[in-house]
Image (cartoon, rainbow, N blue to C red):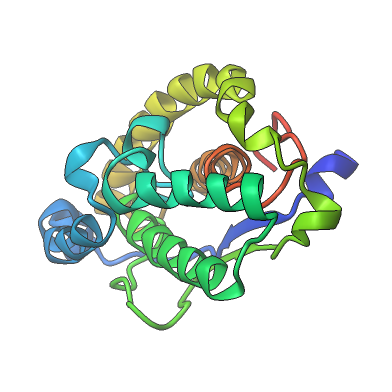
Length: 218
């Protein structure tokens, strides 16, 4: 595995579940509606489109969704804070981290990676972590102006990977209905796409690292 991937200051893992509940899987979209409404109200998702990040990720979000509502405001406020004050308040970071962990749990549930209904508090089977930055030491204060642009190659790849992840989820849905299992290879692929989304998100929009995201699902 690439050392850049090993050391990247953002990680996402989802515990593999050997057996899935067929009934909740069949009605997964309906079951997700209440908790998704809560997430949409928190993030202002009505102003853009979201995808499991942040893996996130959902598991993480795509560029359009991240620029809507609260999350878009958070990006601009953080950029200004880094550029003019070279600060990233801990409470500010902790709020963003917990919001994205919640988003990752919703995404994991929607994409059939887990049968655990998303908790607003507990981590459950989704482990997502982002390293808190030392702004003066680790971050170039001018990079927030261009990170979103530098990440364009990732956006292009992630568009294709997201379509593939959606197709894989449909296959997994049928597999669970007929066998009760989510094939491990398909599971790892969807988690990998979420992991990729998360790394791009923390680099270009959460602004917690200057380390360019690796082109990797691992």
